[in-house]
Structures are given as structure tokens and as C-alpha cells.
Image (cartoon, rainbow, N blue to C red):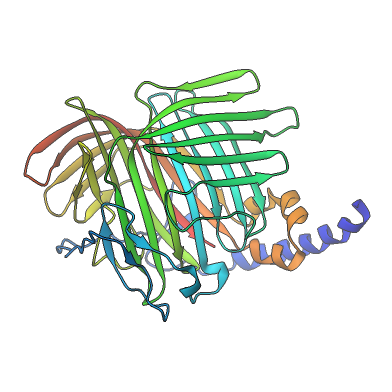
Length: 409
């Protein structure tokens, strides 16, 4: 086995050297490029203008695509009413992206569980972050070939990632999403075991169809009103989530362009004895029929128009500010922890062993173009929101996060 793999390492090394030289020679003089606090050259995400969006709400089930593969709908719903017939998708397979992601958090810890297939590879990943120390307690991603995971086309069927004796299972019963997993750590002796219940505290959520073109789209279902209860065990150390622990579901299906950027934030907490949660975001696609912004309070969605984000790319841990164009939201966000991740060419080399085990050399060369640059701040929101009936609700120390992402896939 070693002798067979050795020439592959040499070939890959030569390719990496050439690819790195090519990347270093790219023109970075564009006026909308800046260098952020990590020394990364990024493109500024333009702020939305202040014009009002005519948001189209769908109140019953409807096909997402027409028979010819063009979009049948663009807009939003309080329920996952958009039905996908994947046989109608015209994009090449590697452009079709599918995932089910949960971010969870409380005052002391945050983390995520993800199962995804981005068309040219699939994976299961978990992470746990400790805010007080600023440490990543663990972060593990296991790669498999695309098509290895069955993804339902609805938000309610179960999903499972398996690789050897490792697994992430997401079961769904009425009002609950139950996640169990067992993943090996950095060494064979490390074992990470998780058992979570995400309790759905609101009947309504945000289902949004954002077009990229007449046939390319992102269908997202954001459920920010989840109570997180459960434990994570790493060897003999147990981390418990119960009081004031929250989660958000990010369920996505879509045919994406190769390069993208976005902003996404969510939060949850008790306000006057009731759970209030929020979902905020923009940065990609055509949002003239619906934004990603909404408040969920007492189980009901209060849809918002555009929200402008203000944050300092020279210091992502400085306060962020959010202001809506309709006067219905103004929030300050104070970070307490910054999750920074930069998966570029060299970052992909960190997965070299897994890549060689699962992919051909030509596939690996293609996968090395994958990039994911993330700055995700966890902290607290303070300010106010205005409900559909005009009631102003004060928001104090609402737990949550806000992220900036650049993706090439």
C-alpha cells in the first residue's frame, strides 16, 4: 500500500506547488477587495439598499420547479411548503448542494452538527467550542464520496451519516429532532459521543426560495426556535446542555454558483416568559421576492424586510450592529468568542489522508479548489424588534451568533 501511494504523493506535491504559485499570482488589486484581521484578502459583501422588498408569501404546498426545470416559485413560507422533484433539476450534479446543519449554543459553549453533500464530496462534522477559554474543544470532519448519504427532499424525514463504525443520526418525531453520534477524535483512543434533543418551540419557521437564475436556486428552511437538551461525552468528560441552551436548524437544498459569499445570524432567548428567536442574513442570489430576515415570537413568524449589517473586518470581535430598513429591528451584537476557519488549498491538504482513501487523483485535484473562509462570532444581542402588530419588544442579552462566509465549491 505504501509503495502504491508514494507516487501519488509526489504527483500531488508537484501539483500543490504549481497551484500555490498560481494562486499567489492572482490579481488582488480590485477596489472592492480588502485585507481583514487575519490577513485574508476578501471581497466586501455589499450592503442591501433601503428600497422596500415586495415579499411573496406562499401559504400552501407548491412544486418548486416546473417540468422544464425552471423555477416555479420565488418567495417565502412559514412552513416548508416547497416540494422538490430532483429529476427536474438541470444543473450538473456537482452544483447541487444538500445539507442539514444545527448550530447550538448557551452562555458557556457553542457547537455544530452537520451532514452535507456538496456535489463532489460528502461529509459529517461535529464541533464543540468553549467561550470562556476561547478553545475549540474538538472539531472533526469525516469525508465520504458524494452520493454516499441519502438526503430526503423534505425537512421531516430522518437522515444518517455513516463511515465505518462512526455515525451521525438525525431522527425526527413530532416536535423533536433527536441527534445521536459517535465519532473518533484525533487519535484512535478518542471517542466523541453525542445525544441531543432539539425541541421545536414554534410551529412556524422560515422557508425561503432565493433564485440565482431562472433555474438555479437555494431552498433554505431556517428553524431558530429550538431548545437544546442533551450531552456530549469526550472520553470520560461530559458536557451538559439544558438550561438556556438553544439551537437553529439550517436545512438547505440548491444549485449554487461556484463562488459565493453570505452573512447569516441567529439567536434565541426568553422575553417576558416567551421564547423569541431571530434569523438574519443576505449576500447571495436575488432576494426581490423575499429576504432571509424574520423574528419568531410566541410561535409566530414576524417577517422583516432588509437588514444592514455593520461589523469591523479588522476585528471581528468588536461589536456588530444590525438595522432594518423598515424600522422594525435595531440590535447591537457583542461577541464573546470568534470561530475562525480558513479551508483553502493548504487547508484541504489537512484532509489528504481521507482524500486519498476515498477519491482518485483527478478528483483530488478538483477538490483542492474548494475554499471555505468563515468568521463566526458567538455572543449576545441587545436592542429591540417590532412585531407585525406594531408592538415593540425589548431584547436583552439574547444569545446567538453572526457569521461571515466566503465559499468556493
